[in-house]
Each structure stands twice: as structure tokens, then as C-alpha cells.
Image (cartoon, rainbow, N blue to C red; front, side, top):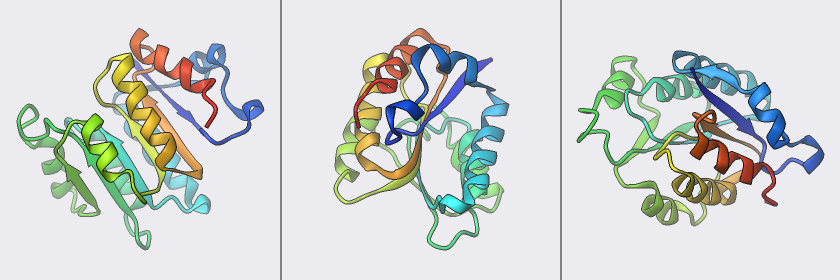
Length: 178
């Protein structure tokens, strides 16, 4: 199974996951990724998660979970960045969202390293899920912008943290001063 990790980027260092701890605390994902996202965002109702961002959509499993979790919350919306949704994935993620009756999302069809700087000004998110291009450099760029767009009480989640390239980026951001 792949792995996912959630980091509260604005938490004091003592509350952040140490790099050696994240592998033990990561939850198994693939289909379970959607359960993690749904349960985490849904359970965080008291934190008022309403604005969410996802980098990478593919088949839309995580998108369904996140949109489903925030569905019905006043002012809630999910922003998805996926340049390949209609070219490589035949629109399957968006189609799944529409079949589920979810319309609380916006798709940005650009590569994240260009889209994030464009939406950067004034946009804040409560939850960011990074599951884009699986190289250290892309993950670091995505997380760099995410940490600047996330609310102080927000959450940053990295998918596939068992992959060496992703682990390298997560290790960096577990020590990154936000």
C-alpha cells in the first residue's frame, strides 16, 4: 500500500511529527486514502474546514472523499489542480464527482508549479492534499506554496509518503519553519 501523512505545518515543533515517526504513524491508503481524507475532514467539523485544495485528481477517489466531507458546509469549496484530468484520465475524476451529485469543486487544468503562484494571492485553505507529480522537487514546490496558503489551524497532507522521493520532501517539511 502507498502511505499518506498529515502534517499541521503551523504547529509548534514539539507537536510536529519527527521524520523518524512519520513512517510509523502514516495510514495505509489507496482506497483507504479516501477514507482517511473523508474521516479526517468530516471529523474536523469543529475546526470548520471549508476551503480545501487537492493537487492531483486522477480517478477522483480522494476528491470524492474530500468533497463529500465538506458537502453541505456553508461556503465550502474544493479546488483541484490537475493538468491531465481530461488528457490522461479521460475526465474520470470529474465524472465521478458529478455522478455522486457533488458540485462544490473547481478544476484548474494547469501544472501545479504554474497554477499555485496564480491562485496564491489572497487564497487561504483549511486542508491541502498533495498528490501531484511524485518527485521531490515537485512535492517541495507544491508544499512551499501550500504552507503559504494554508490557514494557521489548517492541515497539509502528503500522499504516497512511502515513496523515496516523497519521503525526502516530507522529511524536509517536517523540519521546515513555517
